[in-house]
Length: 239
Image (cartoon, rainbow, N blue to C red):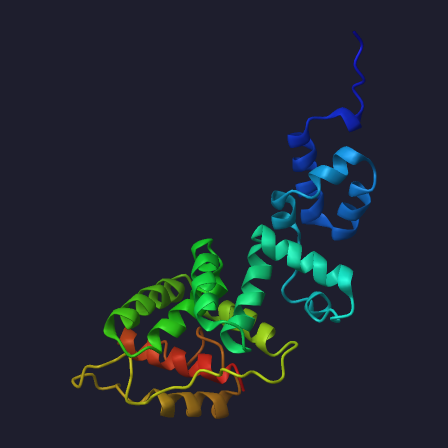
């Protein structure tokens, strides 16, 4: 018996892959594809497809959607439900610093970081090192050291600063430094406690407050002091 072999009769898995690749290129093209036939419409609603959607975190048009613009809000909510990494990151930053559930926000940030999102890994490291207990500080220090070796610190700060300064003007939970709760606890360290002075010199002397590859504390041999310097940079990202 003859069976049609047109595109509409492709297996669902094939349609899902097509929709995913389309979503990674253009949301507009994804919408057009979903309107082309029932098979494409069904495949385009899979979580896999929404996780593939290309949403540039730098493009504020995506993140400044009016609450009255229901299609845009619903689309972002569906991306979040699917586990879209960038959308999860954005919402989680809101939970941590704008007024959502901070505990849930930190848990989700760990999940996003585990998926290889470097800015999420950076935030997890900073928030852990701001805690009082040695175990959290050591965990945060390990992640900080890994990002430092990878040369990813500047990029992480730029991504995070673009988020917190892009659309939000009234952050409710700005992290604060406790000068007595430093990562470097060695009284034998000659640079312990001097990171604030180095930051002020670098910022006002060079005018660049997020770069980790030029100046800053990169020349300091103590990794704990370099972590304290990075915490200063992190807190000032909210300025």
